[in-house]
Length: 229
Image 1 (tube, rainbow, N blue to C red):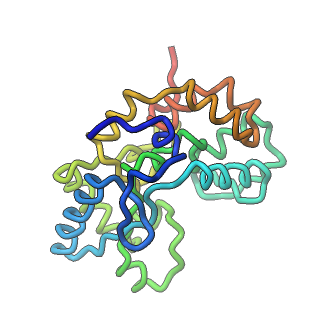
Image 2: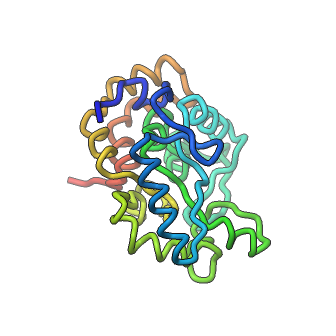
C-alpha cells in the first residue's frame, strides 16, 4: 500500500476508504481483515459488529470543542463526571484526552482502527449501550467477545493499542488497530503538520495544547503513558 497523504493521516480526506456495514469507512485491506475476523467470531458465537471506524478531523474537532466548552461530560477513569469549569486548562486538557483524542491525532483518522461490540448480546441484555469498560468485563454483554478478541485478533493482523491504562488513554478493550498499516503511519506521522492544522482550525484550548503537542502524541495517540527521565 502506498503511504497515506498528510490530509488522509489528519482525517481531512476519506476518498481512499471504502464503506462497510452501511455507514463505516475503512482502508480496503483493513475492511477485508475485519470481515474475516467477523466470520471467525460468528463461528464461535460472537456477533462482532462495528461501533466506530473512520472519524474525520471535523467530527473529532466538534467533540473536542464541546468537551472543552463543558457542553459534553468529562469522565474520570472510575466513570464519575467532573465539571470542566472547575478545572484549570491544563487539567481540562488531560481530562478530555483520557477518553477523547486530539483532532488530527486520533487513530480513527487513519482508516486502520475500529471500535467493536457484540450486537446480539447487547440487544439481549436490554440495557443502554454506552461503550464503557464494564460492558466488556465480568458479566458485561461484551465480556465473552473481549476474551475472544484477546486470544484471536493477532491472527487477522489486529492489536489492542489501548489494552492497558498506562497514564494516557483509559483502557479500551473495544479498540482494535490494524497493526501493519498503523505502524507505517506512525513512522510517517508529522507533528509539524498536526501543529499547522490545529492552528488553522483554531480548536478550543489551542494555547494549552500547542506547548504539549509532542507529549500528547506520545502519551495518548501512541499510548506510551507518562514518560519520565
